Structures are given as structure tokens and as C-alpha cells.
Image (cartoon, rainbow, N blue to C red; front, side, top):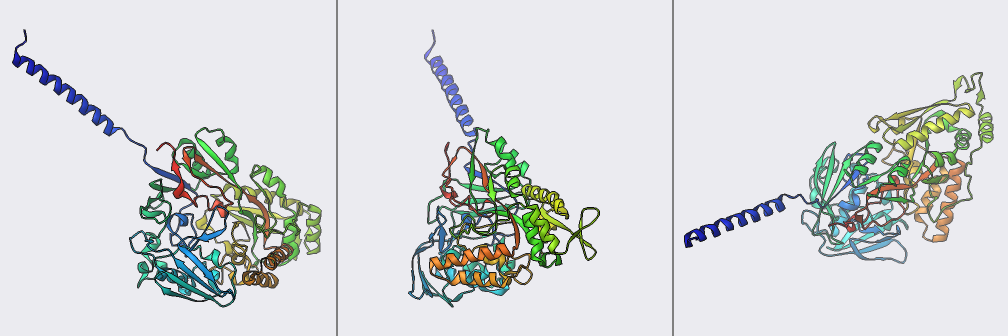
Amino acid sequence: MITFNKRIFVLFMVLVVIVAGCSKKEDAKESTPSKENRLIYASEEEFEGLNPILEETNLDALLFRGVMRFDESNKVVTDIADSFDVSEDKLTYTFKLKEGITFHDGEELTADDVVFTIESIMDDQNASFLKSDFEEVATTKTLDDYTVEITLKQPFTPLLDKLTVPILPKHAFEGIDMRTADFNSHPIGAGPYMFDKWDRGNSLTLQAYSEFFGTKPSIEKVIFKFIPDSNVRALQLKSGEVDVALLDPVQVENLEREESLTIYDIESADYRGILFNMNLDLWKDVNVRRAFSYATDREQIVKGILKGHGSVAYSPLQNHEFHNEKIEKYTYDLEKANALLDEAGWKENEDGIRVKDGEKLSFTITAPASDTVRVNMANYVAEGFKDIGADVKVAALDWSAITIEDADAFMVGWGSPYDADHHTHILFHTDESSIKSSGYNYGSYSNKKVDELLAKGRTETDPDKRKAIYMQFQEELANDPAFDFIAYENAVYGINKNVSGVKERTLGHHGSGFLWNVEEWKWNDQ
């Protein structure tokens, strides 16, 4: 018979066991790791800086916001602006800003910040690559804390597109030289994500900004992991070490079989071609440039190198409403290529290589080694150019070893799905020579008629007349080529199948724009 005291003791021991068991269960529950709510993006390269008026990156849409923004159809709509008015003469734009928008440091975004950003772009000391986008601006002023007035020297049709530029916080630059400011590595924006940390050489982490004025981000962290090797990016995507990666065409077929991934094969305005360095005597003869354009087998490049994920290129505006398909397309024709070289005075030598004035028809195509598609294209065309008597070599170099202005020819990549002025004026206008300005005209291409058409295209307000101008521009550029246009490359992204919310739109250079609505993305299992 168990006594009362013994019964109490037994009951006590049972309770101890139960409590201990519960404690163990609680400890086990607490020690079970839960998946961190983060997205890891495999970035092709590391950034030099994060100031959006000094350098173009694919972080801009996450960190910053502009007065205007591009929507799902790449049409410009209001963003920080609540509304705007345009004067009848198209010379005065008045923007009313949303109230209560804050930067990541808590300071309110006001009209002063918009004026400061535009004036900083126009300031020669800052050497902004965007300066030519605002060269028609006469004055920018605040009418009150939330109203900005911009007056123009003459009508400037792309202005609303240009005002998608990220707005900078004026207070972060007071008394500081912008080009050396700490801001450039620790940015403060007003976008859905804020800067967290930058582990140089490895990764950059952004944290969701809880006070963002638009759609609040569902994913707490976005990490840009720097992986220059495309094969490593593909392997880490397959293994789950990264969640999003831009793929090379040769990787797509294999990764399409992975049940853990969703593949997005998205049309882009992103083209590849050979930039002719006009400082080289060889390229001053238009017949030589045209000959190499005829000697480029674009169809085989699209089929063999792009694996069908793209299309042949012959114009910088093919994926645009102003596309002119009636221009010279330089369909593969060795007979025409050889005839043009004959006409240019390049005669075939005993070894099959053409010679003129004792000089061999020889040059080097430079390509970034980290971009296997560009390297493969360069090697393919170099081999093919032997058929017209040219000795062409390929230099696949690290970006740190490349100075495009010094290359004989460069395997270039450009393109924009936005206004026709975007990535045309800054690439092909004489004043945009990278040697004389901060523009992207790395080959010092110069054509007076092209300059006139690009200038008119910026100021013409009638849509039909404007289209006619850019149609004519494409014709002139085809007749006097700055590039040997080769192919448009689709942007093929692999992404973890558990991520939803991706909205497709025609993408830009190197697939830029894929992250445009990342604040709407979410993990389906969380």
C-alpha cells in the first residue's frame, strides 16, 4: 500500500518527467531552423558604385524611385509624382509629388530632392553619364515642398522617360564631393529595399524597407551574390544555392528539366554586335565596314550559339514601335563582301590574306571573358572572316583589362525597350564620344546626318513625324554602320519555382528590368 507521502512523491516525479519532456519539445521546436525569407540573385558582375547618376546597375529599381516609372508595358507612368501638367507649348512641366514619402534614413522626400538630382546630373563636375538626357532643361525649381517646375529650351519629347531617373537625397551630399561621397557605397534611396551590407568580392545585401510608400515587400532580404562565371551561376541555381540567375543559351535545355526551377524566356531589346573603332584607319572606309557586315552569318549564330533564344539583328530599334524593316539587313553574302573589299583596294595575297599598301587585313576583336556568348560570337565570326581574306584574332579579357576605346573592334552589347532616344543618342551622336564626354559612343562614330536626325527626334512632338525621323535614322545608320549588328539575345532566367509574382515585360541590356517589380515577389511556401 502506497502511503500519502509516497503518492505525492510519485506524482511529483511524473510532473517532473512531463515538464522535462515538454521542455525538450520546446527546445527542439526552437532549434529547428526555419527558412530565411530571402532571395539570392546570381549577379554577373560586382558594381563599382551604387550612385545611380554615376553608374547604371540592376539595383536601381530596388533601392530608388523616380518622379516617373516604367510599367508592365514599358510605358512611363507616375511614381513619386502624384500628377503632372504640361503647358500648351510643351516647354513647362509641373509635377505634384506625393506627400509623406521618406528616404531610408527617415527624411522626407521633397521637391528640393528632385531639383537637386537634376542639377547634379547637369553639373559637369559630377560627370554623370545621364547629362545629355537633360541638356534641353533650362530651369528646374520648387514652387513649394511638393511641386517641381521644369522649363525647357525647346520641346523635349523623351523628358518623362528621363524622369524615371532615381531621386537622390539632397541632405546626404551637403558639402560633399559627389564622386567621392560615402553615399556611393552606402546609398540612401526611397525604394522598396534599403542598403544593408556590402561584402566586397562576395555579395551585397538589401533589406526590405517597411515604410516604403508603394507595395510593401514580401521578401525580407534580397542578396546579390557576385558570380562572374556563367557555369558556376547555373550550377548554384541547380543546387539551390541561388534562387535567380540569367542563363547562357547552352544551359537552358539542361535546366528546363529541373523540377525545382521555372524558366522565363523573355524577349529583349538587347543586341550584340561588333563595334568599329573609327579611330582606326581600317574602319574609316564605309565599304570595309559594310563588307564585314555582309560576311557575318547571323542565322547560324542565332541557331548555333543562341540555340534559338534570339533573332538576327540589323538595327538598334528592332523591338520598338519605330522599327524600320525596309533598311539594308546585311543578309549573309560573301560575294558582296568580297566585291566591296576589292573596291576598297584590299587585294588577296598568296596566303589568302588581303593586303593594301603593304598592310595585311588584320585586326583583333576584344570581348569580355566572363560573357561566354560574346566570346563565342567573336570566335565564330573571326573564323568566318577568313572567307573574305581577313586575319582576325579574338582577345577575351577580364573587364579590368578592357579599354573599349583602345580596341580595334569590340563585341558590344546594348539595347533599350524605352523611348527611341534611349541608347541611340548616347551611342551614336558625335557629341557622345566617350573620349570627349561621358557618353557611350566608344568607337567615336560620327555622321552629320545621324546627328541631325537624333537631335530632331528629341524635339519633335508629333508622333508620326517623330517616327519618320527615327525610320530615317535607321536607314542612314544602316548605310554608314557604326556596328556590325549580329543578334538580339532573349533574356532567359532560371528562378526557384516557389517564387511567384514575376511580371514579364520586354527587357533591356543584359536582361535589365527583370527585377522591376521584385517587391511583389513572394515565396509560395511562406
